[in-house]
Length: 139
Image 1 (cartoon, rainbow, N blue to C red):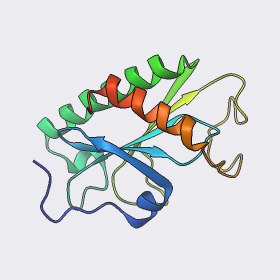
Image 2 (image 1 turned 135 degrees about the horizontal axis):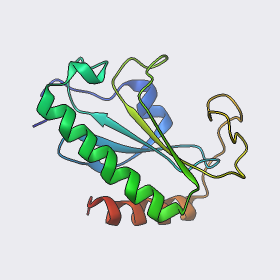
Image 3 (image 1 turned 180 degrees about the vertical axis):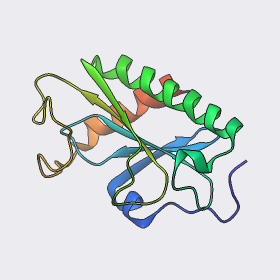
């Protein structure tokens, strides 16, 4: 059950497209066409670190990361997945799941700060979201 007072951090709201909710996490797509990139944000007020979640919620988070990762890998046929919970700029707990290709602009480095975000083509991102929603069981 989500926290009643929980809200999505304003920076995450600005940088993402909401594609649905899993039992614990809100699932978002980052607005950057350079990389197929998801965020999972546990709907728990005040959670900054994974250890701020109870053990059952930590296990649920891992289940949801796994589900999103498998879906992203299937949809994108990527070479590698990057999964990380950094939170250096946005303190709200969120987990990045990024599909990487050996041909992407940042390879093999992390994606942050390599290229300015590239706007998605509206039809392409909608097709991507629809495929992900089916694979992640969001509808």
